[in-house]
Amino acid sequence: MPPSACNETFFVFSNFLYFIVVFSLFSFSESGSAPVLALSDVFGCILMSYLLFYMLTKHLFSRLEKVYPAALHATIANLHGSMLNRCTMIAVCAYAVFIYVLDIKSWFTAVSFLSQSEFLQSFLAVSLFFIFLIIIWVCAFPSYRHFFNTGAGLKGYISSHVRFNSAIIAPWFIVALIIDCSRLLPPPLAATLSGNSFAAYAFIACLFIGMAVFFPPLLVRLWGCKPIHPGFVRSRIMHFCEKAEFSYAEILEWNLFEGKLITAGVMGFIPKFRYLLISPALLNLLDEQDLEAVVAHEIGHIKRHHMLFYILFVAGYSLYAYIFFSSFFYFLLSQDFIFNLAITAEGKPGPAVSFIGIMILLVFLLVYFRLLFGLFSRNFERQADGYACMHTGSGNGIIQSLEKIALAGSQSRSAPNWHHFSIQERIDFMRRCTSDSSLIKKHDLRVRRLIAAYCAVLLLTAGSLFLFDGSFTGNSELSVLQKITQRRIESEPDNPMLYFLLGNIYFEKNDYGSAERSYLASLKLAPDNAEALNNLAWLYATSEDLSLRNASKALLFARRAAELDPRPHILDTLAESYFVNGDYQQALDTIEEALSLQPSDRPYFEKQRSKFKAHIEAEGAGQSDDDVYVQEGPGIAI
Image 1 (cartoon, rainbow, N blue to C red):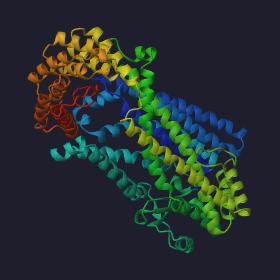
Image 2 (tube, rainbow, N blue to C red):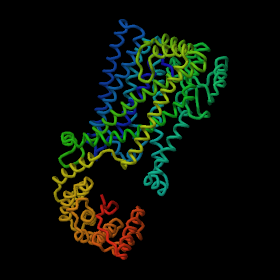
Image 3 (cartoon, one colour):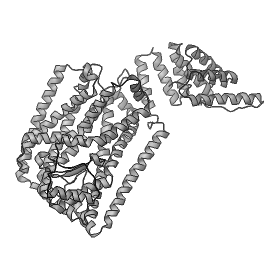
Image 4 (cartoon, rainbow, N blue to C red):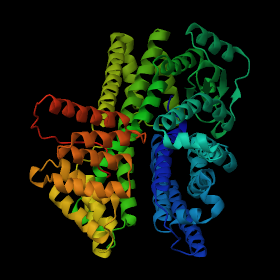
């Protein structure tokens, strides 16, 4: 996509990041059990926030207009775009106050019909932020009209922004609506989706693919795009696309911002739903040769499969964000200062926990999309320029297009752009490519290496996640859970379940002595707790700390647990206890009983059965086996 006039597309590209921040602030915040403030107070604070924001934004843009006479015209586009972004960042901060101080999500969940609808909650959440954006556009319009000498009206200016930003918010609404509809599914199907990880992932993948394929037709209608009128220009573009073997559904006029936007683009993965978009201003600005170069640039994005990579890139974000969040969040929370700040005296998470989590996600999001996405986007744009140069025979078409766009758009040639190289950098590259076409192949190789490196790291990360059983937190998560449980024990010293949970945490950390003491403390308060009896028996039967091994105690506690609750994993502990006491036949009989209950982890139980049979056979043959076994499996319930 070529750069636009007056930096408006730069602003909406940045809005993509701002909306992700807003979605994250709302989605990951935890609502309290009841709203803290009265509804009238919340409503009054929101209205006052909008009023103060309007006054501040109006002042900032008015001051910008006063600076205009002293500034170069080429600088104004950058100043105006920067002011739009600055005000939007302030709006995001104000929205965060709505979430964390006014606790608006609690009011959403307190109303019954809202709490049952993801779509209605999403609509209200976006609306609260969208009002800030409308205030920005209202305040920005006088300077926009003054600086760029346009006859556009306020209504059309705001409408163009709303329609452009619909590309960002519409997918969230659609997903929320699908979630609402999924609640109407028959219970067996709903249970399959919620209880089967593979089915859930398959559903998400189908949803993602469906959005990628069918969203472009919806988007061009939201944007009000119309087919380019039949004539010489349309015929020449169609002929050029035919020569390039580029298939599409339609060539459309991109009429946002009263048709003043100087830009072009292509979207859609399959030809039947693929659209070539060209703004009227660009059609009027460029001659036929230059226009063909711009079209070749857009075709280059498709031919080089950039859009397919972006799907992988977005999917990779989920994986990387999970790993980064889970490791860094628990590491921070395991530090005493952060823990004391975030966890209440009763051992319950305070508002700071949610805030810390969201800040970690937002920092990663900004780094991932602004830096990493920016790196790929800039190189993809350069690769598309190179494709246009190869396909048209020289870089002159792109050079002349960029020269005209820079002049008409009043943009600084050297102005930095996070998702494009600057205009001057692109022109310089095209001039070098015109004199040395091997530079295009070298850049193609660079892009392939970047993609290969990303895919290799993605596969390595996914493999590591599988090997580490979905956890990169090490002992940090266990340390946090241990501190929380210990703090809760201080406020609830007679709660046996807390001691049981603490024992499980110690067991996972291989601190078997502390685990034994915690289980005994739990049983002192609740002697008939079958799970505590079972876990203590398992510890005595299989502990890696041989000084804690006690076969007789293991059998004693395991028998009592099985009497109270003869479930498969408890029967497994009893079988293992018989085994360590040398009663192999009783161990075999017990594991057979567990197998008759159809345990979910049947291969493990069959492995146990084979082990017991092998020892019975060895014993019958007069052989001895003095090996010490460290057992892992369902015997303990964590």
